[in-house]
Image (tube, rainbow, N blue to C red):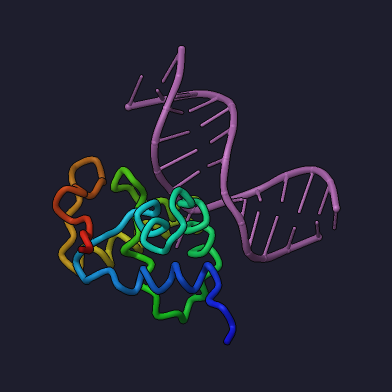
Length: 106
DNA sequence: CCACTGACGAGTG
DNA sequence: GCACTCGCCAGTG
């Protein structure tokens, strides 16, 4: 068997995020078994193809902000729309109240 | 092999 | 809150 790559483990965690909830980069790295490797999670998403089934829009940074605008102009707008459709609310500063919407696996 | 880059985060001042 | 630094490591040329 081909051992699962880091990316695959990261994608597996993201796929477990329930609809209407979000998770942070650091949290995903932690759940995937790579504590403190938040940057690699970001890189994994960067390498993601368009036709993947990974709900990448449920991944936000530790401050409840969207970080996609850095690579894809207007990409953060797309992400925000997808989240709002699922019921995730943003405050006046354009941030997500993690206290209410962050995914809490047991 | 080397240098550089990058959807991040925690720490410091 | 803002500016800056460092650690993490796969991919690219």
